Length: 514
Image 1: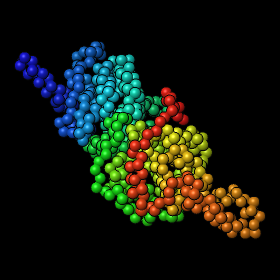
Image 2: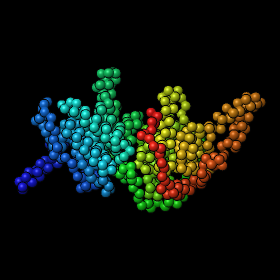
Image 3: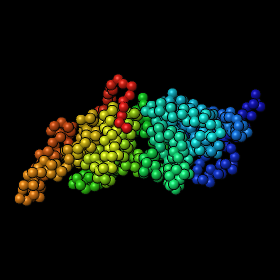
Image 4: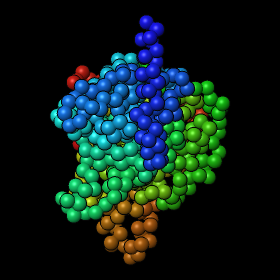
């Protein structure tokens, strides 16, 4: 028995050491950590329990029978992040370039099944060369099993993809099915067809990073939610995100003790937001003033910047904040902003995260490109997401809320539990100038001084239909509040809504606009 135990210890020691010092040095030379080093950074020290460490492939031919390394190029198991269970799998690029074969895929399938059964988050550390060509169709079938499990786990457990190397072809669809995608600049790329194929088919020349690097997906495509300069920072932020997510859809997000007083007055808000509705300001500063200790994690920070989606806390309770950003495109809703916010609302609703919506929106972005690009169906995605959400929902109108954009941004008419407004709010079909030009077109045209008459009628329209208390008088706003009391009002309202229970109609699933 002792000899067998000694043999096992020797095998484990070789497995932990990795394939070779040369392979490890090559990985480090690219500015990349090894799979085990990444797991150590992600999980609490000493908490990782590996699964199927001694697994090896059984393929033959094309030289594979002579190379049967342990782990088969993927490390799987579970550990803890801040004491809470998290499942993880990490491609080991030093073995077959992290390429996926039958045994490799089976290990991933198993850990995904375990995560779903245990009701705990799943983090994938991706650094692989795609399907293992030598294993043919069985490798492709392995990806199919991953996609099916990604879909089964969607909305059940948080799924986070961390891109730490190349991810090409069909392999890129697994991260796209997960809740969050992290990338590292210069070392991680995602694309369906690489630069060589693009050049052969279209004649376009482009680098891997130019085609599918972190900055491209963070700013242009919207595939990536978070992008960082190095792996250490990236994995630390993954830990931070996990601290604000529940283990599964049957739990509430973890609440923490908060030293920031729940009734703290936010006197700075009156100065941060100009009364003139045409003057821009930075909505992120408003959010930071309201949330606990001014801390939040902005999702898709560099994509569709005219809307902000962020996770933060109010009195220790996790909330999802959706807010127009007047500093970018005046805060209008467009195709990308609608899709960004819709996905965020769905994620929050799936994982019992209350929604706080801050409105300062002049409407939808007009233009041929927007109409031909499908703003109707894309804007409807946001409307559908809000209407479908059963978590506590609070909206606050800071300045203006015009037209369909007002309705879509969680108005009371589509199911917001509570709606508040600042004394500077204006809720209307459109701005006063535009409305006057439509309603009083004849009077303005027939006037001796059209401009003076227009100014009179604009003033009249504002006083009659756009004064701050018009909506409150009709029950469309629950209260008009002092901006300094915003934090206290939101905290009290969320405390009341904590036990909210909403029944959804019996159905297999909805059919959201695409």
